[in-house]
Length: 130
Length: 102
Length: 134
Image 1 (cartoon, helix red, strand yellow):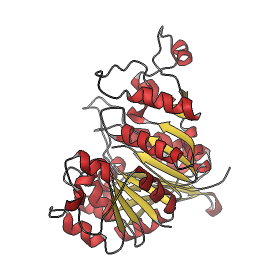
Image 2 (image 1 turned 30 degrees about the vertical axis):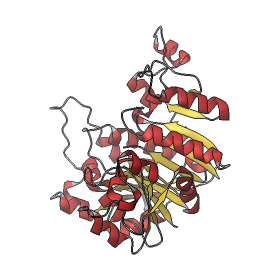
Image 3 (image 1 turned 90 degrees about the vertical axis):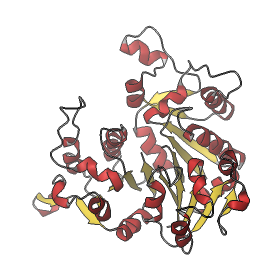
Image 4 (image 1 turned 60 degrees about the vertical axis):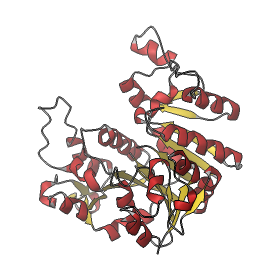
């Protein structure tokens, strides 16, 4: 089956990001396909490159980045939510006139249409939030 | 269509779990994850509401979330099945749709 | 592209959190994809469509007028929980008059709000193919 997963909350603040990561790993382990993972609201912060948690704790953003690269996943960060919260990739930062950017590898920024498309193209859509 | 209702907030913190149970239909499934796992325990002020719903729906709890909160499986209401993430994925496949009560 | 039944579930009041505003943004985008869209207002979600919202005292943009535009985008199924209104001491009179224009009926204005009890809401939810919560 094809899954689209939506994540509404940022890393660490709520368990949603962890739950979603574990769910995604299980989906893949059981031979299903992930069509897209869509990050909305504070969920966009799962794509930040600037997180430094204590050394003995998990680095959620990096876990997403690695999951994405190892499995060629489509992790999409909503552009409107990202703009509100100050998360930018290199292109978006240049477009907005900022001299730095903060998006980790493995994600791409796009519009809300990607969420709707995910729902249309997938067999199952699962939301993690608060 | 059979629905998998996913609840993630404690029934003692928010109304989400209660609202979920007010909207389930016979044949649906309810899965407790994250803080909602505390609702699976026998002898709480929420137990009767949950047990009544269990006449019509199958109820599950994510074992990892129970254990994380220091709650052993032998304290879970009779009839609630403990699952892991593989079981969570299976539930989402077996039910035609999912709805998260946040 | 296939047409699916999408439901957007709103259970939180506006302004205290961003969910009401950002979920509305998703709803408007879904209109462009010509899907069969329904909205559900349950629990505190009913406050999203109360009339007379005045946000000058809290420094936030009042986005309640955006709900009035939904009819123009062919989003005309807004299911409102009767019990949720009653629990909050509200009636349908407290809600905005949200309408859509039926081009097959000489553009007659028709109500978009559909009052339902829990059992009816559960029935509508059971028909949906994609349910998004915020």
